[in-house]
Image (cartoon, rainbow, N blue to C red; front, side, top):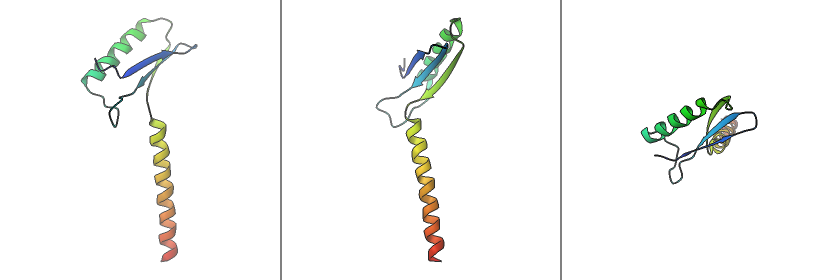
Length: 85
């Protein structure tokens, strides 16, 4: 088994499955991970206390921050280019 998914359940009955692939540069949905995810979905749908499942990934916020920084850099470079012309 891939063992890259961890699951917690909050007080409202929402299960949060978090994917983290330590030692890899990114999270990858391969056959082992899909099997693990299937098992989590099966077990959470059988539990009457669980109202829903959220699947999330580690370090997504860092990626989004980097995307915003690159976009801001692009805007800054465009303004420099326009000023030079």
